[in-house]
Image (cartoon, rainbow, N blue to C red):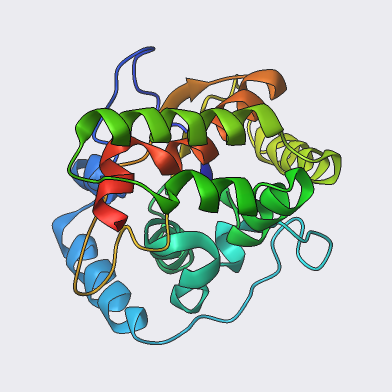
Length: 231
């Protein structure tokens, strides 16, 4: 799950939630610099980047800022956020205004399931799933989403999310809107892509909204489309 500063989209407008953000700034960057940046970025994609010490480096169990994320962290943050971490570190020093953000890792998701003891209920719920029966799929998916949403976020996870959000907000004196988006580990892979099957929430402001969007984003792992694709 990924939380990033918004790109000043109009309230309520769902811009392309799969766009990594670079294209939206391309018109502000001279052509020669764009090509030089693109070449450098392409060269770095195959080389894991070292951690650069984000605002919560070493202190958080469940959070990674973009400055601490590389392609080697795909299992923790998913392909979408791993790419954003690479892009943030490669292009920000070149003057490209990549919005900052952070990931709530797969470790956090497993912690939520452990804390609420949801592993077995979810296994039992899908043990007899008839994927070719749309009504059965929808019913079980809705139950799974409700189980995860109702579980809430463990207190220690909430604390880390809010600490990271406050750090993000402190970077700008302006009112900060964020996008809360899925970044599943099987969404963006070299040989397959399942992007768009989980929910995204744009123009989120305030701590209460951030936590609420995070709960709904976690639950959306079991949308009908996402469940059918994994089965």
